[in-house]
Length: 155
Image 1 (cartoon, rainbow, N blue to C red):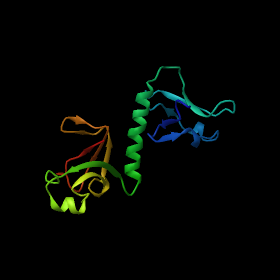
Image 2 (cartoon, helix red, strand yellow):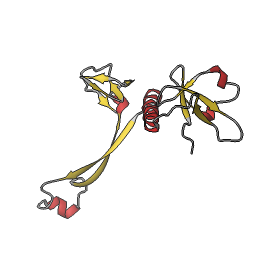
Image 3 (cartoon, rainbow, N blue to C red):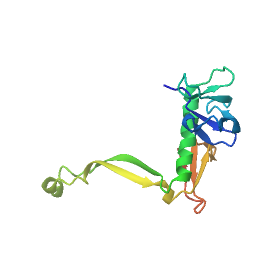
Image 4 (tube, rainbow, N blue to C red):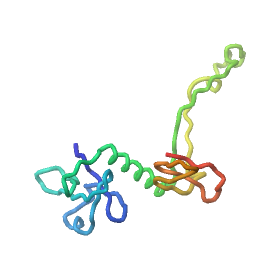
């Protein structure tokens, strides 16, 4: 398994090692998503292509993956027509045991688990990595420029 398959360039764009060629590797400087130190693309035939730190520093892989996930979420929000999230909700009617309709028809709407899906882009149009709202910092903050009174979403 490759430890560092991705790095960010001087413009803040994330690149996968599979995108890097011998020709374009000299055009950019690459940096670690975890520690911001310079990385070098390794494209030799003896090893699987990967990024490595230019100086052999210790880097926290959890931070690297965390920062990669934040950038990925923000890029998906900004580049896709929809940004859907789903969650399961448990519905339990307090009257289902005595309800004749539930007993007769076994209405699933009265109890059980239902999957709810929302397109966050229907309400939110701005996305900020490490955004701050009301004294709290979000990894990714979604807000609405059209409806500033709409509470933000913290991802």
